[in-house]
Length: 478
Image (cartoon, rainbow, N blue to C red; front, side, top):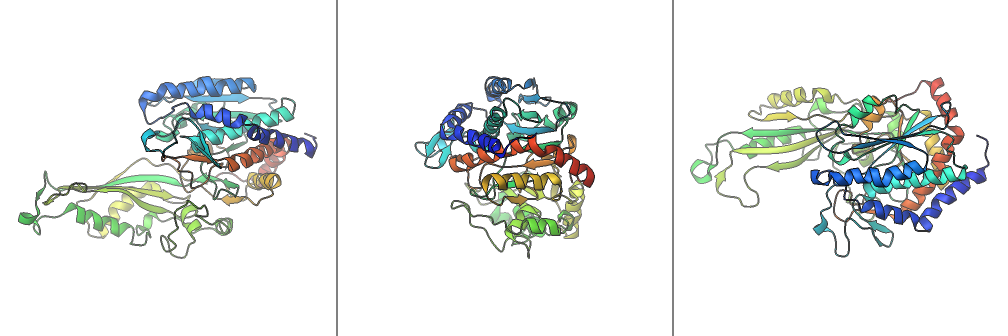
């Protein structure tokens, strides 16, 4: 499309005006008020209401066709699919958001704050789900409407939307729905927002996410506890055995010792992308332990380019009220966060063989279903296009992360739908996501409205060029 740069600026100004006028805050406050706690089955009615009464009417007003798809899993968490086709010859973009939130923990918020109503305190906007993910998809929808208004009701591309309500319970049924609706959700690129920036002041792009594999370590040695004075020294203590099992897997400085769970070496491209990423810049972020994890790597490389083996829970006996008895059992819940190229499918064998090789008996390893790691190639034309657009709008150099350190359902979009995946987050690391006092930063919301309006605008201008470049280069997802 042949339009002036001033019109791009007008679209950006219109998006920012929704913030300055207070309309964005009003819309977001209304959305936060929906108690969409997917972890509570009794709140299913709010999941339906959010999609049917809040999101669908907006999309209908913007010219989308929508359909509400029941979740094929055993939870009542529907998925809204929407489509706006301007011309079958135009590029097609797929985007995503989730309307569900974690539990509110209403009584744990600081005095004067509450989860279901936005409270503004300086730059901080407090509310449950405001960072994860209602604020983020609200930014994208507001910027989208601003671009349509600037283009006289047109986008210049086709857009398809996936809005789920089960992300906080691991997106059950979403892969099955996307597989069944693959034709409906076909497109040229996936562009969405979730997760944090690297810091509040720096726009960020990430291209996938680390995978997640959970496993339990269990010892059941006898039917009950026995007096530690009468039997101590004669009975095997499961807590001691399990401690040694864990110590054999990850050392005192956090280095993974199970060879099969190690990632491939960090590539030169990934190392270069992470060379200017500094973790923990925000004032409320935890202090980084420089000597923790794989030696020779920066903290950013350890989180974004390497694997991490964590112990999330450990129990033997009753730590809150210990008694003089050797406990009969011990349990640990462990997690492997892993990057592309890790042989995670053979984790059960690697763990069993590792324990046997170290002479550790009696420990039962139970590996749970995993979420696959994904990463778009860093040299994919969509990557440069996204970075250039954000730089043009903000005047800042965006951070480029090969993948998010955490896990989003990117496997579904990259593998099931076969799309190149680009994420532009609008939150920041110290937002208290999933905890009491979750908050959004108004300054980041305002900047994100601008940069998303720029991205939506540029899709209508140059997306066809990127698609042609991809075909010539033969690049894709990894």
